[in-house]
Image 1 (tube, helix red, strand yellow):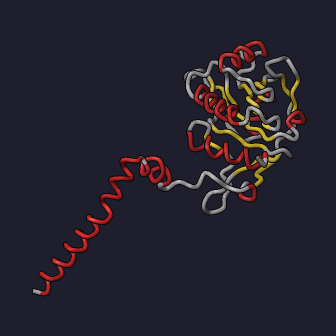
Image 2 (cartoon, one colour):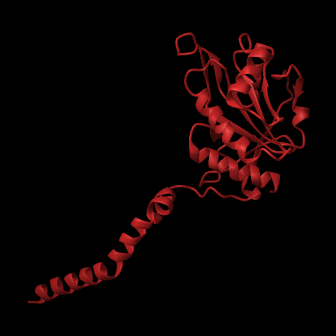
Length: 229
């Protein structure tokens, strides 16, 4: 008999829970609260962080290249600006279009801020001349004056990518497009420091995923934090 009473009480608790909470859950589903709020937060680190949480993971090395307007651009031209770095090439048939569409999202958010910039280094300088880069920028509708598409000496670019930023770039005739490179973005502060979030153990993540919306959302927050806007 004691077991039967236990089952009765459990059934009553389930019934009361259903009467009280299920209508509320149904209302939240109808209103989109669960889809827009709960689902996107499951297992994800908060998009918002403070400046103190953005650690310095290195210094941008000196560089000097030519942009799409045939203008010489160095790291000194970015001094005082918060900017994002990527390595790409204009004939890339795979990840580059995704990366630059995501970069356009950043440009749109900070289009009126002269303290923001982007540095896009081509890893195929033999093809990507200033003229080619200018057409590429026009095709994407690039408007920000501080978004420079940079070309120059092949070895200097690869040294900057692989040793300066530790963002892999390489020539590989066996892959589609003939080149391999990272799809990650680097964030640079106004003093030329590479900045990064940390993981739950306090280790620097170093880079931001340039292919996923989560990485772009993090960048939007962190750029704004460094710009103090």
